[in-house]
Length: 282
Image 1 (cartoon, rainbow, N blue to C red):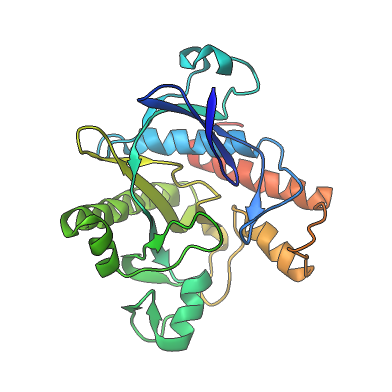
Image 2: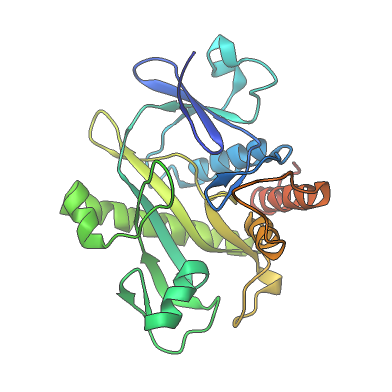
């Protein structure tokens, strides 16, 4: 199989002119660096959470999934190495933006708000506290950088990139997916503070949801029973690992292996998110 992309976590192979295989590895990245230690089963967790959300949202947004079943994969992928961590998907013309939706004020959004009361140029109400729920979700797109950091862009810039009609559709669809899925997650004891979506266009010109959906790698997941406004939150995602790296002044330039207890705690957080959301045992 022809490998066409090797990202921080995903490997993408071309099956034919209409389909791809996406394989999710156990690699983990932080601060745009692939860490030297893997998280066992992380790829399986991410793939199966995405599969869950693609199925949950399929009635109101098209997605790229053809199959997640091993028996439907090309013969090269019909081995245990690829089971539960792979998807056969439609090939799309991906849009050059990442669609960030924020429902709570945290992370870089909180830092920006403290400076001038805005997040990505959007004026927010005065007096918000860290981790507070926003009056309504906001759309804060970024560029899709091949290397380094993605850059925040305005909605007007998105319109210039892809046209006003498509930009409005992408914005509205992103907010709709976030809103419906965040409500569901809340019923399972998880707050989805923010997330990232990616879209592409199919051959018929339809907007199609691709990449990954509402995973601990693309979202901030907080436990509802511990939620408290006014400070940062414990999370089910890789924020725990990011915080550990910051606290230990881990050297990004000269990365060293991550201690096993930190890796196993990270793994447990991913699995806990999967089990809470799906109601299934991993």
